[in-house]
Each structure stands twice: as structure tokens, then as C-alpha cells.
Picture 1 (cartoon, one colour):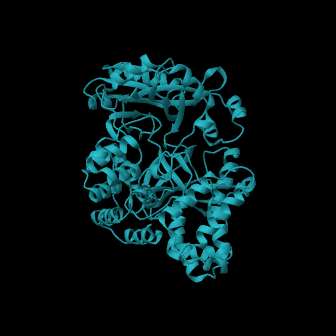
Picture 2: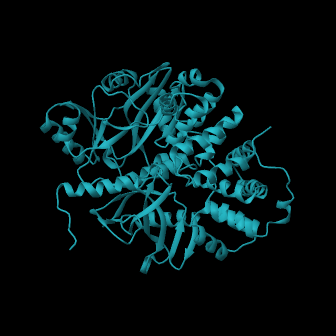
Picture 3: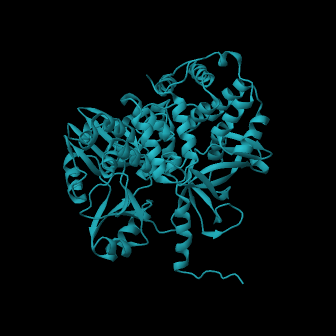
Length: 563
């Protein structure tokens, strides 16, 4: 007997209305126990707002404009009624539920008597992802229309949330690790470690269901299974890093490129982005180089891809992102935007995981394993030498330095003090665009003024912390307008509210108190420095981090005391 999708949707509503994290984990644990083994991974992914596991090569390639068009056709409402419904709920899934409850569903949609199952929803999503070629858009729309036509109002709410990847229940991956631990009696730390090295909590949950603690403990790093990247904290300066690392550190150039993880196995190569998305097809020259210059039967290496201009110098990050988005005419883009790969880590080699080896040993082994250039490095205990190396990196057009503790293990998905990034200016923030306004003058047809939001991990909400019209070129604004129109939820006068999808890196002069935004803070003189297509809304900085940056400002200046 297959589990009904209705039960997953009801669980979603319970999570929305639960504030206790332990209770949330218990609710999900009870649900996971009730599932068959082949339902566990799909359900785990869906609860987290994912159509497929992280690292899956399948993508839906369905815009919000397509989804909303189908919903409006099914319930026979126009844009005005849709906008009014969204104004009442502020949530796309809840909006669709309300429209299904009050709208007049097309007759053929109401004739379906059988209940949707979790596996049926997954199979439909897989069919959508596998649809390509001429007429694919129409076939995708028919599949979606059938799915929505079979759904109850509550089920439609969660189908939408999965399609757009925005659950807003406050239930995140860390709580899912706890739920899997509780459900299948596996120690939480074991679940957490398995999730870090496999990059797929759904797979961990499935193994835990089938084989319990023993099965989870046997999960290992392996080729073509992307590993969560180890992350770096931000350091104040070189002196701070040397103090934190016990007097000596390995300093590397922080390149203005995109981080990738390259998997090699018996001549086959796959390239994964920082988000663990398969981008192999976008970089045929990197595949060829890896096949020719990595001397191993199996390996997982990490590096940075940078776009190269005249004289072999790096060109701005935005040009490189055009390669990541490209799925057609790859050959022309290879010639138009040449790239260079530089490596900095080795985490798996010929059947052995190296994540427990020291950084120095991994780097030494990497040098023996490949002829591909390594990111420039200097190991030193001398502050003056390190600062000179920082200046050299900046003069070369790079972002700064990454400092790595010599004896540090590779800790997937963890942002600890073993790695630090050193940049000379105020730390930029990664934020998501949640709304935009049309400009004035020659920009009157373009969405060129952007509302920027940070993530509240406790609720899943995105809280606006600023607004800017600065930083993008005309061509980038035109492309941004096209993308945001596809994500449009409501449009009132000159303002368009969008599904949070587009992540941008934002520079600013300072953070100040402001009653204008609900979070009470605002960025001063914000400007977009790059569009981060290599990051997802899950990766944007939290409102807690914004507050922490605000508080750090007072380490060097006084607070204003209100009379």
C-alpha cells in the first residue's frame, strides 16, 4: 500500500504551526517510520522543499510563470484575483490552496477519484525533468496540469512549495538529521557525518530505514556522489588568522571564480558546482583536461574555475556565470568565454577518503596526482610575509586570501575556524531578490530597483534588509528583468513581487537601524557586486549574521544614544 501524498501535506501544515524544534523532529520521525523504504528518500527531499536530492542531474526547468498560468487556468481566475489572494496569504502555496478552495476547478480535474501518492508525485516530477526537445514546454505543462488536477487544495499547496523550493515551515536540514536519527535509532552525529560525506540526507534516511546504524556507518565518500564543500569563516586580518591558527598558516589566493568539485572514475568525469549541481555539460574543456591531467583511477578534487580575458588575466565573475547557465551552443561559449581551472584540495583518491588527513598531506598528495595548476600558496608564520602575499593577490585582480590551518581535516558542510577568508573591505552579504521596481527615464521598461532579503532559518522567511538600483550593467539589468518577470507573483503599479530565486552578492557602507523594514535593520549605500547563480536561496546569509555584522561595527565606533 503506497503512502498518500495527503499525509505529507498534512505534516507540512503541522510543521508550519509548530515552534518546538524537538516536536518538529518527532513529527517527521513518526512520519518517516510509517513509510516504505522506496518512499523515504522522495519524502525526505519533498519535506525540505526539493523535487530531487541535492546533486541530482535532473532539473525541472519549470518557471513560476508556467506554474501560475496552469493554476489560473485550472481554477479559472485572472491575474487580479491571484494577486488579491497572494496579498491575503503572503505565501504562494497558501495562495494556490485558497484559490483551489474557492475557485471552480475544471470539470475533468474533479473526475479523478484516486488519491495522489508520494511516489506518483515523484514519478511525475521525474517525467517533467526528463522531458526535452521540441514541444517539451507543452508536454511539461500537460504533466503539471494532470498533477494539479489530481490534487486536493492542501496537496496543491505543497506541490507548489516543492516546485518552487520554498517550504517556509522552519524545518531545515539540521532538523531532518535529528528526525532521521530519532526515526531509525541511529546516533545523530553518525547521521550528520553521513549526510556531510554523501551530500544527500534522503539517501542517508533510506539507508537508515533499510539497515539502521550499521548501514549508515558504512556510507563512504565515493566518486559521482558530491560531497558538501568545507566552508570558511571571515577573518578580520592576517594577524587574527595567525593567532587563531597557532602562529602559522597556509595562505592561498582567493580567486574571483566559481568553486567546483570534479569527480573522476575510470576515465569518466563529472563536474559539480558549489550547490552540488551537475554542470559537466557546461565545461567540456574542463572534462578533457581532467581526463588528461589527473593521474588516478578514481579521485575527487576541488578547485576554482575562472574566466580568462586578454593577457591571461581573470575577467569578472559575471562573465563566468554565463557559462554555468549555458545549456545550448556550448561550443560557441567555450570560444567566447575561455576558462581556467586551478585546484586546491583532494578529498578522495583510488578508493580512500582523505577527509581525515591533514590539509598539508592532502595538498602534497594533490600535487603528486595532477598536472593541473594549483592555486598559489604560501605557508608562513610571518605576518609581514602574509600581508605582502595578500597585497600580491589583490594586485593580481583576486579577491584576497584563504588561510588554512596546517593540520586541519576536511569537514564537509562545516564553516569553522580551520579555514578563514581574508578580504580587505567590509564583508559582502549574499542576499536574495524578493521584489523589484521599474526604473525611470531610460530604465522605465526595466526592473532595475531591487529589494534584498536575508534568510530567517527559524521560520524559513526572507526578511528585507535593503534596496538598491546600483551595481549592474544595462545588459545585466535586461537579463535580470527577464528572469524576474518569469518569477513574478504579484504586480502593483511599478513594483513586482517575485519568488525568491535570484541570489546576489551585495556590498554596502554600513548597517544601520531602520524602522522601514520589519527586521529593524537596513544596509546603507547597498550595491550589487555580482549575481550568484552558483548559490541557492538556502545559501543566502541569515538575518542573525546581518545583526552580528551590525554589532561588530561598534567595536571601532560608539553607539548613538537616543535622548
